Image (cartoon, rainbow, N blue to C red):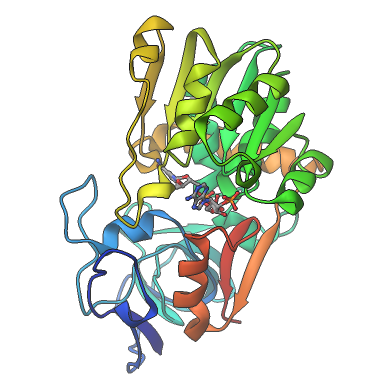
Amino acid sequence: NQQILLDNRPQGEAVESNFKLVQAPLGTPGEGQVLVRHHYLSLDPYMRGRMNDSKSYAQPQPLGEVMQGGTVGEVVESRHPKYKAGDKVVGMGGWQEYSIVDGNVPGALRRVDTSHVPLSYYLGAVGMPGVTAWYGLVKIINPKAGETLVVSAATGAVGSAFAALAKARGCRVVGVAGGPDKCRYAVEELGFDACIDYREHPDVKTMAKALKDACPNGIDGYFENVGGYIFDAVLLRTNAFARVALCGMIAGYDGQPLPLANPALLLVNRIKLEGFIVSEHMEVWGEALTELGGLVAAGKLKPRETISQGLASAPAAFLGLLKGKNFGKQLVKLV
Ligand code: NDP
């Protein structure tokens, strides 16, 4: 069973030598346990935070242990009555080829139907990132039809689901993404009304101007994935009583400072800002996944994936995700 461990913690920017590839013996499942062969690993920005040894909402990833993370795969052997060999399942198997899972732990494993939705989508649009978009949109921004919403990291796993969910509610949706290819794709394939290339607008002033052009009626809701000057520029264009769903601040995950130039705008525009962690809201997952699965089935949410091949490619693919080298949901294919 090939595995990738967290070998040492990053000093500033995360690097490949923080990880270590090892071979470990493959155990056999005990009573109540299930042996799962992973087909895909999910690579997610939150993993960067857990590589640090700092206090956060989640425990840090322990050193010398398999990198934790979401997986989809197939049951190879089951000693639990709820699962049988051949079942397709979602779990938190981590960066390894196989995992042994206790079938009695609530939420540890979830069987999924791959007759209409490809297995890998359960790690993206019809999985944790999709629910993240749903929660921030529905529970925090809570938009009315006709309102203008902005999302950063627009073509990523979360951003692309956000666009489909927001269009379904009759909103104008404007994205912010890195590079002309991503921006073109956002408008032509993902249904965005407009998309701004932040690399062409590298400071608050030019970004605020681009947002003014793309959002002539101002901004009523912002789904924040990035932080930094993009957030400042959005604040300059918010309408009174705008809502901000604070989902991620990836521009600061390697330790970069993210100062806010105009915090007074939160007061002046009476803005509601709420941070959230999707795993703390399991009560919405059923409803959210039903809607996301429906959008995929109807062709209204066409998720794009960047797939790297083989377990050994996971560290480089993960570091690429933190720099925007991914285009859509970043996965590692094992089988
Ligand atoms: P994505 O698929 O969106 O990939 C990350 C993207 O972030 C990159 O492709 C890149 O897009 C963008 N990015 C990276 N660095 C920068 C930078 N310095 N400035 C601007 N953009 C940058 O990842 P996800 O969809 O999985 O996650 C999106 C966000 O949602 C992350 O911040 C993540 O931490 C957060 N999240 C939060 C959750 C929660 O419960 N709160 C749960 C899941 C995700 P581009 O090339 O367009 O810049």
